[in-house]
Image (cartoon, rainbow, N blue to C red):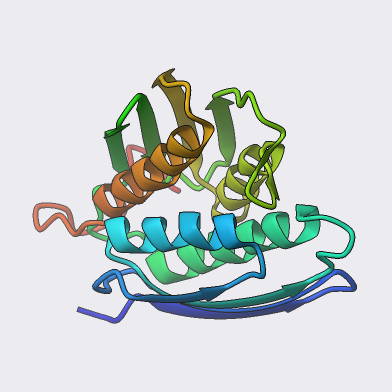
Amino acid sequence: MEQRIAAIKRVTRETDIELTFNLDGKGECRIDTGIGFFDHMLSGFARHGLFDIDLVCKGDLEVDSHHSVEDVGIVLGTAIKEAVGEKKSIKRYGSAFLPMDDALVLCAVDLSGRPFFSYDAEFTNPRIGTMDSEMIHDFFYAVSYAASMNLHIKKLSGFNNHHIAESSFKAFAKALDMATMHEPRIEEAWSTREL
């Protein structure tokens, strides 16, 4: 089996990001975005999806977290798309219900090649740590469009903002891991039409 690894570097006026992403890893990660809560979320994503991630982001945090979080989403989505490649012999669809104490989040993924994003979760605090809560939506939006995937995330229950956010990242990890698994009964990309 070919290695499904992507290395992406992206430099803009706001951010300088380097990412190595291994789809078939062991959940090992080294993450430094300068935003502690975001690092915590991405570490959970790596560990629970069994993805190896080496990520450094230097961003304009003196402004706020917006550019760093959104641009990491763009880079991660690009890396996912590149690592998945032609999508031969993968399941394509994945979903997970992820409980975390009071929070229960559903995530569903379709690696269709057609981007669409739906996020149904609200936060009662404007910030979690030093990260703006609204950036969780923007991060997943950026990932879904850069990866050309359908991504649906829905909070089914929960009141603790940290738990809701963490459930979202971990549910996405589980759903993406399922969608990218090899299916020996499928030889080509799984579709009734050309992707």
